[in-house]
Image (cartoon, rainbow, N blue to C red; front, side, top):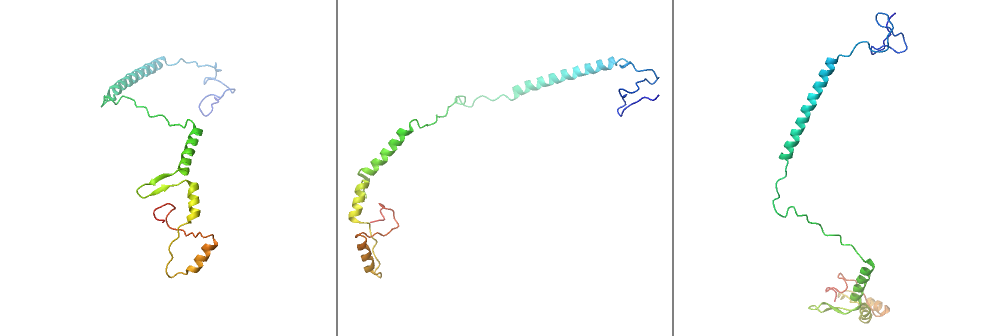
Length: 175
């Protein structure tokens, strides 16, 4: 009866398990393993492992000496300087009140802005009163323009005539 083998050359379990001589198979290996080959493999593996161990140990010693950092160039090189701490706003309510007070101080007091040029800071309430009394500055008219319509319009507006100029209020360009 022929031996039933699968693609790998092993006998298929559950089928007719017979030896080539026709005797039934005992279900285990009938030959001993080659102990000499196994011992030779284990010795070769041990030698390879020991060679690798000594090679890696030698590399570590080499790199430990070769990669040492040189000494510090200065005596201050090893001193660690800590950065300044964050400047936190400890009391935001108090800070806001102080800012508002300083702004009110600027708006409500007299002070010199430029003593040489004669520019004075006036409280805002007084500045509005002065603006109502004196009016806004007016640019001079060209000789060819009709002045009658401009005069009647300014009289209708309560005597105050306003013309936009290139400068900002309070600058030296506005007179």
